[in-house]
Image (cartoon, rainbow, N blue to C red; front, side):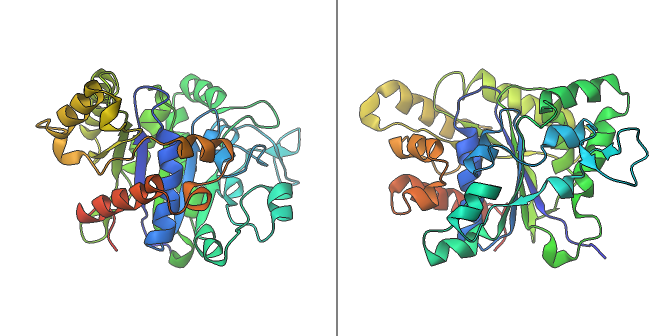
Length: 323
């Protein structure tokens, strides 16, 4: 019988190109390595950048097909003319770890180059996004959800069903739901999903994490918009903004403006207590993303990689993650 509830973290931001997906991917890896947590990454961005980061450019099935009810899975028991049915979330879920580079190239996922990488890569799984074989995307799934009065309820049920019947040791400790930059129906769906996650200070806290860059838009109106959406859902469900991660933080020599924006965020009466350790701007992040290689593998000793550990420390100190 399933009794375990994962911690559910929704990565939000009301503006694009903040580095949210890069942060979400590397935070997932840092949690899997540092704290030996099983982590499931749900790619809720129609572009599928997170899926590609984990080397799933062309996954067998995509999230849009499951949430949109697209019939793509051959099934003799399917009561459809086509003999096909929509994929379940469990059928979508794929491993990140592959034993060899040949397997990774053929199946997707990442093969370790060092023995210690195999250990933490095996604690990661992915629910991929992107364009499915039928052309279905998350965008088309949203259209289906909006046309059906119970569309969002069906999508939420599908998300919550992934661990149904699994033993506790098969269920991840943490789920990370990465969203696209623009606010839409998937934002509300993900927040409702997170509200059903673990929320006990002795075991960890689910909630929304905003990823921002220190500029006037990202830490200003865009952050307020994201916060307001969390507050809307919180009127009905137990959900809160639990952290704000400043990423792509420039060196002080880059200009006083960026220093002022970060200090304003850190000293803000409401936001300040939620601001985590910063993640500096580095060319390595862009390289890592382009090479489809997490920072822990690409540049394990660089400062930007160590920044991820400091974010994890902050989450532990604030009882979001419990060791």
